[in-house]
Image (cartoon, rainbow, N blue to C red; front, side):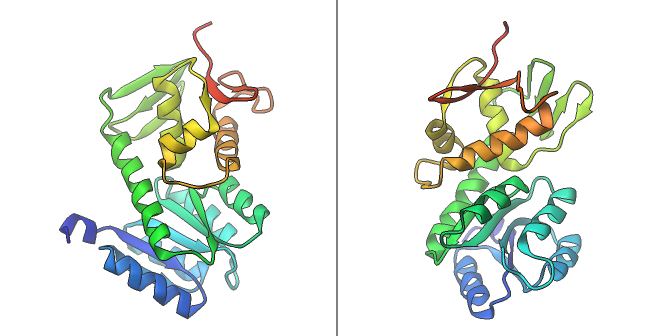
Length: 235
């Protein structure tokens, strides 16, 4: 087991002790250092003290629920990978979590090996974006600093989640190229990811809210009807 892997801390926020312990055992076996808590309030205190790289949040928590916790984490930890645990059939929970800044979701019940595979996929995505061949991508007044992991519109820095950063990197490296939703899923989440296409739409909508002057009439990230999305070309 590699020492580098052992240093990666995963926070599991789940009020059902049996589920929390089960996830912790499997994550430990995969080489992660696991922090556990059963409430959002406790989670925020832990995050202040520990360098958490991945947070796994149950939606249904006592007191502060998973949605509010996700929002609170995003205010101070834009680069943390957040995965929500939602109930089967609760589509609104999935969309709500993504709207509030989560990178991914898992539907209960699930195989813990799939969760671990998702975590590795997100970590690879972070590693790949740090190894870009070009240090700075600039287009239409947007600037993506691959080495510094920062994104700017003009002189204003805009905080992007890891998934949003990866999507913008893909689009800015390929201006005027149309990507289908499936293309984006495969490139950002990996070909083994079997998620809902709505995941892409929600992340694009969040990015537009951050970078477009008028998100309801986007001029930078265009919708290619029947296909997907593209970053508008020079014209």
